[in-house]
Length: 421
Image 1 (spheres, rainbow, N blue to C red):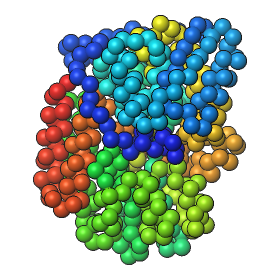
Image 2: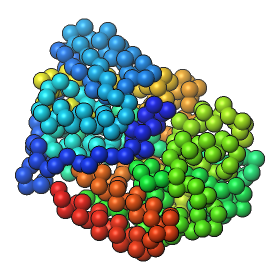
Image 3: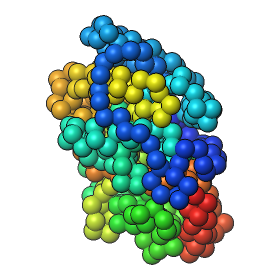
């Protein structure tokens, strides 16, 4: 769930709805859903783009640019509520009703597999195979379900470590050193409340340690592992030892940012949106950012946020829809999204733009963070998977469950979720 002030909840901070029931237009065998391909991009006819509220005007600018460049086509922007929960609910209402109102769907990356599994999206694998090289590879991975691509990356995101330059000389190279420095100084704050943000924060450490919670084929839970137990113990011990304050279990993104800006933390895990806000605060000249450190000798890894653009299976103009998606993901339009809406680009070339570098002084670090990041489990039952993660991580942080107990229960709950689809 593209981290800007307006889309914070849409990225990772959202409390997710329970997944829609199986069926829809999917394959009854439980395999890859049957869906028509959208292979031809032709800028003609009417297209409606459904996505969250256009608070910055950047979406409207891209629509206007497309319409001016393509007089035989007409794209209309249909703004959904700012809340990601409400966006998803309204999109699903239309899709269940097989409504053709929305041609292009703006989807949080974690919704893509669910929509695909229900048979609600056109298959755009051919387009990705021909054009995928212009996108950062990790963003393309979020569009893949059961070996096919069901959307095109639109914007992305990955977290950073923020650190006080007046308290530590540089960003630690591994999580172990970071927590030690945090304990010796003023601590680390992150998103420790019982919600999607905690799932993301936990997975960042787990991925950096080489662990997983679901098998590569998406069919088996892998959370009852030593890596999961080690990360749970590491995070719980961090609170016990004072590296992280006990209050962190009440923090979402904004609580963590305010604590850091108030001088109450040496380190903070947060999204890039906090950079500009922190620069305007009283610590503006006393902090810097870094990509995630490694863990146990392995390379650091983040977790991808962002939105994909998919074509509704019920669209009456899939070729026009694909033409608009192609236009909206060109480097010049991606630059508009980056400079006007602070939405991290998905095309590598956009990060070389002088305008992007000016608007995002951390553009190089952001590109690296996105390149090293991994998707959350691409599964049609991701909401249940995430709930199993954040509930059990939260219990471990609160001391209500041992790391072994939390890992075992997490694994059981994830496995049960996987078996429902």
